[in-house]
Amino acid sequence: MKIIYHITFLAVFVLMMSACKKEVLLDGSKSIERANSLEKELKTQLQSSKDGWIIYIKTLDVNVKTSAPFVLKFDTVASKVTTKSMYGNEDRVSYFNISAATGAPLLTFSTGSILSDIYEFGTMDITDYFFKVLSVSKDVIEIQTYRKGTGSASEGGVVYKMIRNENIAWVKDWQQETAKLIAQRQFFDVDLKLELTYASGEVFTPGTIAFFNQPAGNIAFFKASYPTVMNNKQLDAIEFDYSVYFPVAFLGYNSIFWEVTTRFTPAEYFSSGPAAYQRLFKTNYFLIRKINARSIDIFALDKEGKEIITGKISII
Image (cartoon, rainbow, N blue to C red; front, side, top):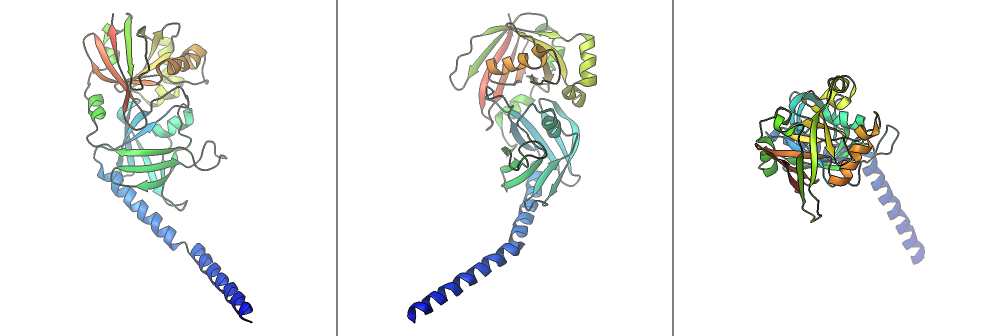
């Protein structure tokens, strides 16, 4: 009889616990409360950083060890965001939205923003311009691309950290140069020496490079048909020669960078050439620290914002 009593009691206890769990699952008030709290904190922190937030984005090439920085300044009242990056110096204003439709705050960048451009062009590891907000603190906001790729892809892409832009040494270095490289004619149509130093200890043998202006017809093509130039008016397309390679490169905001795309031909200009540079230099860009009379100080960063490549381009 005692055994039956114990079994009956245990069965009732299990049923009661199951019912409690079901109530918790059905009652999403705690989940909603957390999402609302996170959304409120997100808006507060986005607005509170007067110099914005930095996100570091990597290319799809495994040879590349660097990540390109994007400084995002948010106006949560007007839902506007300005971006400073190698693509331009806050010359484009776009919009963003914060919602909790997925059960967690979703940070969405509008079509026409730099981040949505990058996603659509497919040259970096951004696989969506919808981002789930994972955590928010005073100094770091963690976000994750909502999908891994196309609209039918599964959820959960790359996780990024947005870092508060406050007293970061490389940012001050990057923003100090006011001269545009395209206007410094002493660096064009001449032999230049490229020297690179890697924090990893890897050795780069200095080599000879050269910058050349694109012909008028090519410039017209880029302005009319090439998405990166069409959407970012501050960019100048050039030819960047090194060894047997001569791909298209771009002079952006205090930067030199190149992209790999199969949308255009010839390959040595748009795909195989830029890919060779990514393999040889371990980066898809150089940020400009300083333009001197006969040299250019350059550097590149990893996903944590650490300088892992420093170098110099000098007139020979």
